Image (cartoon, rainbow, N blue to C red; front, side):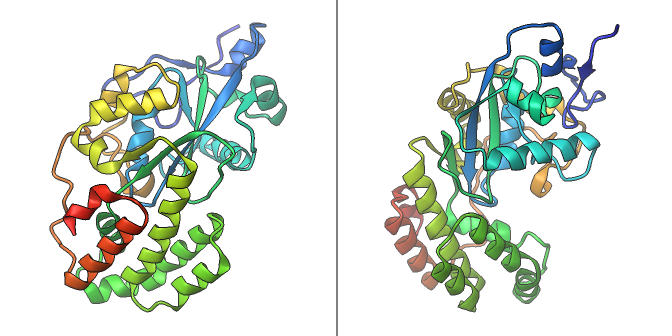
Length: 302
């Protein structure tokens, strides 16, 4: 009989440098090899903090398996099943899971052979049950990225799009992140998108910095990707692998990832400073924010 060989939906067989065929964990069980306990790590972050690009890099590590939320929704049936696994693990509450358990749940066929670590993006929910890392970004740049996400050409359009699309999602995220009800009400009652985002950022940053000892920053990931990715791999108990430095080569040209990130674009050092700067009032509020949550690395900007 032929081997049960699968290639994940985000590693397309026609990519410029296609990976070796991806044998599933199902074959390990069929071959009668001992099942393993897979470690579960969370990648906890803020919206628009580079989590998709980080997951893309880690997805090509031979011992890491990214569970869902890398590419956009609906590519294949596999995507739907991986979403079910993601939803299960997001509330699983344990640090490891056995292949027997995954087999029992019907998910084991989609875990790549050799994986010892399952990675879950904790972008829009909160759980401190599993170890992991946190990924943070300068609050002004993160806000600008979210505020302009829907493509408005001026502040009026961006405000209308914020009210229609971003604010409802921001509120939904706060509920999934277990924000206190009074903070959610404060976001709803604030009239300015910037002030609404400050409330969100302050609470989420505190969640992350109090829950994780391994804190990484978007700016370091962009400015010095190899060093930062090496440190992240070690924090996730992965043997450093140079493939993660060239992960863009494993994806078809212009493949859009979650949030519209181009998964085929090379991660290169660049200037991360946005062209638009905060006004004096916003700068003062941002300085208060980063000082309050202990992100002193950003204080000099404001």
